[in-house]
Length: 233
Image (cartoon, rainbow, N blue to C red; front, side, top):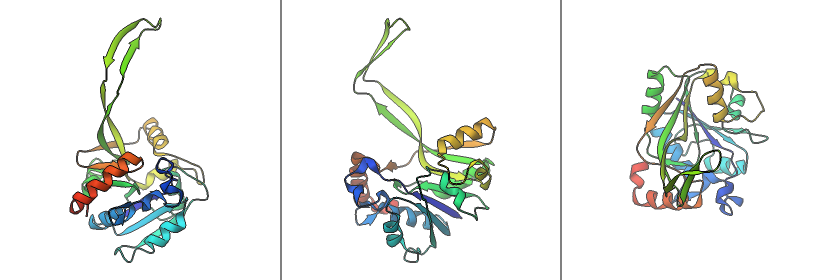
């Protein structure tokens, strides 16, 4: 199985840390988050990883190397400019079978094999791993009609959403949507696929998932990994 890790972002929400360290190399405990992801993919049965890089990409390549120290071959695709989530795939020439795409800054105990099996069972062209996220608003929320006459006042409501985990299973056919060298995000891909009535599915995951892109979440990830390292490795 082939996995592509997206590691080209600037991690602006984690500045000043990411001024000198690319976000995928941010440490959680004694290892970088990217190393955790690579080891998880290897354990799940993937036999090749491609990492797409841009910002501070040479540091990422120096840390990972050819993957031999992790026991899995790793190669790199360099973006001349930011190409969003899906755009870099156009530069990978040998995507001929089902493959996984994911962000390089995710702490999760998702079962990648189960995700890939779900994708194949559904005969999907794209499958998005999703997670229920609660959003609590710490204010009173007002609703009113077009004349601004208030008809609802909701004190500190909570909303539940199924959000993308930044982990996707794809068929090579999605490459037909990408214009080489142009930025293209997974949001645009999904909307274009829906319009063309291609099969896009949601794989609902109820384990642990955290994107370390915000300082608060990064601190939570450090603590979680320190206390439950064996759960992720």
